[in-house]
Image 1: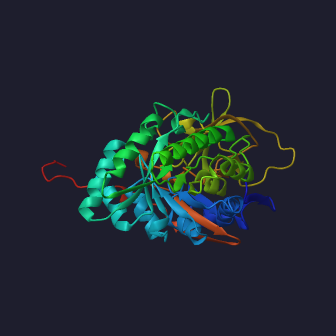
Image 2: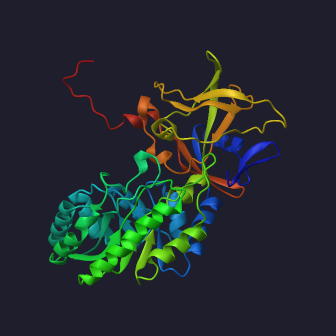
Image 3: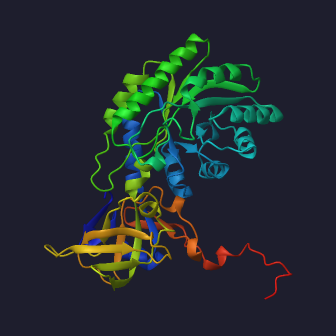
Length: 421
């Protein structure tokens, strides 16, 4: 795990012993490496140098203000999918003109917030949304720049729940309808239709689906220009995967070369929207073993972190590495063990039959590659408070979100006077 390594027999985030973080912040706690986040962003910037590409971090992967501000300071824009993420991006210091508003279900209220804020681009995903955006912009007396997200009908070869560019998926406009929608948009007085957008899915480890989708986008841009439409931008989305177990993601150099080959000669301003590949490897979920329980055929570790803290294994069957904070002795025996949480669901399981060295009650473990879609997908199920979040740089760490108090879970709730107690 990049940024996390054993030093003097203990697992560290950069130069900080994870045991020290557990002592200061408790568990479960998300821990992020600032250096890894910065390095991953710069890898994109270096690979894309000379391609006229804007890099817009996808807040859905990790929306903590400290993380977003760190990236904004490096020059990143933001890819958002809700009014809440718009406010987060602005609060973190992302300039409005570097914000792209994506998402299939933007409400009129959210569209109004985006137009008022002056976001750089809204990616329209349907005819009704186009009508709504024109109405909203008209009511505000502002002309809004818009791109149209196409559905290129390309199989991303990823998990079905995070594939977004095939026919039948809810995202984007059917490829054969896009030219007609541009013609409609051209007649709307408050819409400036100048871009094409797409995003085919997440956790892709093969460039070929990207290549097919980008080639279809280039074909569409040429057709639209033949129709007399001025197209000056292409939003390529995100989706490059990371290593959880044994995946081998494509190199960013190869990805950039493919971008140059497919759309680099169109004279367009390009945008990419990485999320997982920037923050995923930069985070772990630090948790403590509550019990080591004997199962029918193997032991079960019960952690103080549950599926409400990290839902990916339960929701997607996702693999995450699990490492003890105290380094196992050389040659220590391993045996299959289940790793589960305290939530009242059988699905609250992080691993089944995982080969691990001996781990006992009270030990700390780190669930790796958890910097993306960890906290952002967390919940209060079973009335469990949200975990803390920590950002590490070198020998120092900061609590960038304190652990939620249990009382905060019901502080806003009201019991009607007619309910007998």
